[in-house]
Image: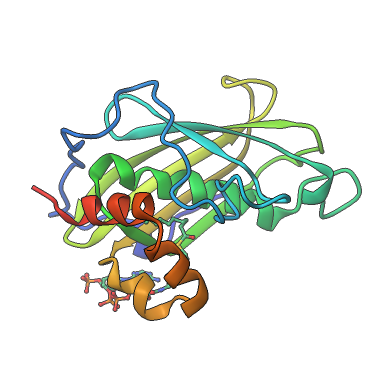
Length: 194
Ligand SMILES: CCCCCCCCCC(=O)SCCNC(=O)CCNC(=O)[C@H](O)C(C)(C)COP(=O)(O)OP(=O)(O)OC[C@H]1O[C@@H](n2cnc3c(N)ncnc32)[C@H](O)[C@@H]1OP(=O)(O)O
């Protein structure tokens, strides 16, 4: 059983997403947006270390290997961890628009159990944009990129300014991020949209 709530159905006057001219070409790894991100950062020992790759149009693919630290039931991935993998993959899509956005809503279907050591093959795309609202969808397959669907999600991301993080983040991490020239450069570049 699956379904999508009205909040995740784009309005009639929503528009198709437009890939930013400076978006990385199809096949290129996007890289972590923040070293300490639980989803993609290399600095989190038990994080997902998810690596997203630009696809055609406004789409990405990603792989996530379920580790023993990600268990819920014995030998099986925790559902919240799988939702995190979907959230991270969907979040990385906004890089292709060069838009900073955060998850407002995430609806997940858990279709098949995902054992430890499984590689989850994720595929996500933006379906529509309406003002600050970005609608997207993702699937996670097991046994290969064409294997059966184990999880899927629909999401609504909301565009925000860098100030969202500066005003809401814990001061220690914000100061450290702002002292990192690469982090600042990356964040500010995203604020200059055509
Ligand atoms: C540097 C790159 C960083 C990338 C990070 C990616 C990491 C992976 C993604 C994440 O996990 S992000 C972390 C989890 N998300 C959050 O922490 C977000 C917390 N929520 C908020 O900060 C605010 O609620 C939010 C910014 C999402 C919205 O607040 P705003 O005051 O900016 O927006 P507003 O409430 O005016 O809503 C704007 C529109 O979005 C709609 N909206 C907002 N939240 C919604 C929601 N939850 N469900 C449905 N619609 C929603 C709202 O109805 C409205 O629609 P209309 O324009 O049609 O009137």
